[in-house]
Amino acid sequence: MKHIFRTILAVAVLAALASCAKDESAQRGGDTTDGPIVVNQSSSAVNGEIILKLKPDASPVVEKTRATGTSDPRSGIDELDRILTQAGTVKFERLFPACGRFEERTRREGLHLWYYAKYDASVPTHEMAKMLSACKEIEIIEYSIEAVSSDYQRVETPAAAETRAVANALREVPFPFNEGDRERTMQWHYNNTGNVFSKQTVIGADANVYAAWQLATGNPDVIVAVVDQGVKYDHEDLAPNMWVNQAELNGAEGADDDGNGYVDDIYGYNFITNSGTLTFSQEMSHGTHVAGTVAAVNNNGRGVCGIAGGSGQNDGVKIMSCEILAKSESGTSGAGLAGQIRAMKYAADNGAVICQNSWGYPAGTFSDSEWTRGTYSALSRAIQYFNKYAGIDENGVQTGPMAGGIVIFAAGNDASNENCYPAADPNVVSVASTGCMGLPSSFTNYGKWVSMSAPGGDLSRDGSYGGIYSTSVAADGNSGYESMQGTSMACPHVSGACALAVSYYYGTQKRKGLTAEMLRQALLSSTQSTDSFCAGDYAGYKGMIGVGALDTYKLLLTIAKIDGIPAQTIAAGESATLDLGSYFLATNVLTYTIADSSIVEVSLSGGTMRIKGLRKGETTVIVSDGGAIRKPIGVTVR
Image (cartoon, rainbow, N blue to C red; front, side):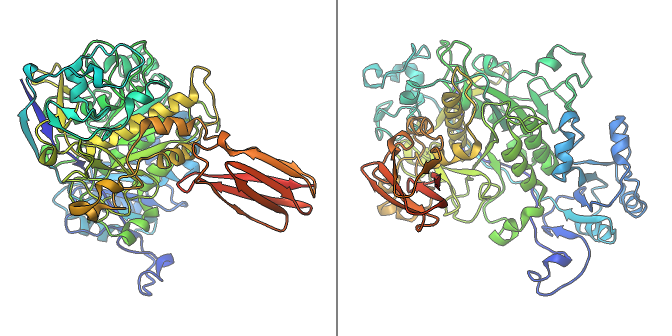
């Protein structure tokens, strides 16, 4: 039987700022035109679609027509409607649809001002933008860029006769590993024993998952949104761990039973067809593969294991499928920019706290200045919305296992050190790829903008069996398994590890208190150094594939001590003693700063901190682990 080894980073439509408004005149060389800001005036823009942001005082009537479910390509603004009609517009609607109980915060964030227009594709985008620039009610005009797809290759998978006895070399797992020795060897990326089907590899060049399973295996209250191709929700190794919208499952077909603005969204939503029907096939198995690394069911005697797939007792995390990508070979993005944006907001509003994204735009498409000025970009706004509101209900109360969300992106497969967006956005965690020898993958993007690395495989350096083995879709549409390679495969390792960390903190007691920022700090402070692999011929990668490589076990140990340090109240002349070993995994790396050293005196030795009051007042002592974790201690001297 053949399996596909793919190098995939599905890419999609994007826009980022390239031009200018009156309040940006200093960056525009003094040009003071008061027209709309035009985002990414690219000759490669996709014709036939454009995104607009209206000014706050604009009064479109399109919201009323959308609420009744009718289709009307008019806005209700005379000048804008004249242009839409002239361009043969067939659709004009809110980019972020009305969303019931979440509508108030949507408006508070200004997302109701964004609109999507679909018009005659024979009208060049630059001509449409030129016409729209005359409309005083428009604040931003945003282009889209043509998508690019990656190639792939097929090779034979190891035959059964090549399977070696590996049980004695494996670290123990806390449950019977019924998936089989062959499958364990194929998933070297969880536990690399130094030998993958008789090929010498590097012990520990993996995500250190088996050790992490001693502490946690998952929790069904944790939801991971897989923004990708559709996930095969009935896959034998995924079905029990799929998120299910019970209101829609048990409600009337064709109705929005839960009032979230989406009809029949049982396992997620298809933002390409604007329906609850997810699509998948052998050609479109990328999303299914990604989902398996995150949460394939463990200990079920089938296929593969997922990092947060549970122990076979219905205790794995849940996968929400947000379909935005069509066939990656086709060169089209499927849902386009509008679908990508809607998918992220949908995920946040419907319970996901981790947003998994194995897609992006080609390296070098945008300069730093173009993207960092992208506070105007609708996609950036959607990312920020997820970070802020995931796990939070419409009343601002934490209802999920974490307050806020974390967005994780693949770094890209261009073998380039040019910035690749959205992965290089400071609001996301970007993931580069390594192989079973611990070396940077030949295809991985790299640079100072990369957050960290994780196993993504590398056939060119690690041989035929160096890919990432996970769930897939067979040629006949049934459940399948295959190996792929790419930063697309590295990214879900980090998403799965984050899901496992949230599960561990939350526990069976459903403990609240974890925030997305706490998780981000723990993730980036618990990596293993990659310096030894970035030497010799690979010296150019040193410091360029993030702060280190994913270590799932160390992440869980770190998250267990991620809570803040209690505030201290002492009298002048008295001291408080703190054991920082209760709050940090390692104490020999700790440093501190004092906001006002005239109020307190601080000493640190062997993990023990002493704070002495000098005079009456309030100040803050910040303790750092030398990585991403910084914990403030509020001190009051009475």
